[in-house]
Length: 260
Ligand SMILES: NC(=O)c1ccc[n+]([C@@H]2O[C@H](COP(=O)([O-])OP(=O)(O)OC[C@H]3O[C@@H](n4cnc5c(N)ncnc54)[C@H](OP(=O)(O)O)[C@@H]3O)[C@@H](O)[C@H]2O)c1
Image (tube, rainbow, N blue to C red):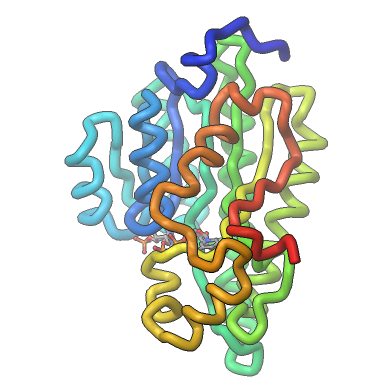
């Protein structure tokens, strides 16, 4: 699928496109929903905490909140149907919802492990499958799946990682490459974003604790955690036509954490 000629200003524009962002009630996902909307997209922002989503949607009329537990198949189907029925298209899927799981494998039962995989790996797979069932918009532009993995899917985070979390995020990398290979010819691009350490509800304790915060700073070449906004460019790149010839790629934005 060859993209139409564009100006530089159009390269990152999402005007006229529809995006679905999971895990949009807080942290990175809330920011992603806002960034995609500010690039012009109509955004369906999904998570379990509807009140939080509504507050984010109050800031931008292009953001539409959808209550959704991504571990539930019926919720996933309803989310994609809502976006398609209301906007007539889905161009971008950001699989961002994530569950941390236990830090220590010894504290994690097999059921706990499976619960983390249901959110972090099974849901992204199924939502991406549902995207492929949406008829293409006819614009000739590729559609984009952005799977939010983690540096912990690439390297061990011990002692502060998590077995199910690392397995799910590494699985997301394999899933990204496999789906990219299977769907490239159909005009669906599949890439992964692998952030380093960013402040959010999930990492609140880590940044609040001086020892672990210093551990992050020591292991990061830039000597600090990521700031709000430092994933915006990478997300927009993967979501937009700027990355029209990019698929099966894992884009790390980690201040150098994995470069050592
Ligand atoms: N922060 C980092 O340093 C970092 C680094 C690498 C990767 N990541 C990844 O980035 C993503 C966002 O994490 P975050 O750091 O922004 O943490 P966060 O603030 O805790 O956000 C997690 C989001 O996932 C949603 N979520 C969790 N379980 C869900 C479920 N069953 N159904 C629907 N939504 C669910 C939560 O919404 P509800 O509770 O309202 O459902 C929330 O919006 C995750 O995939 C995480 O693994 C984060």
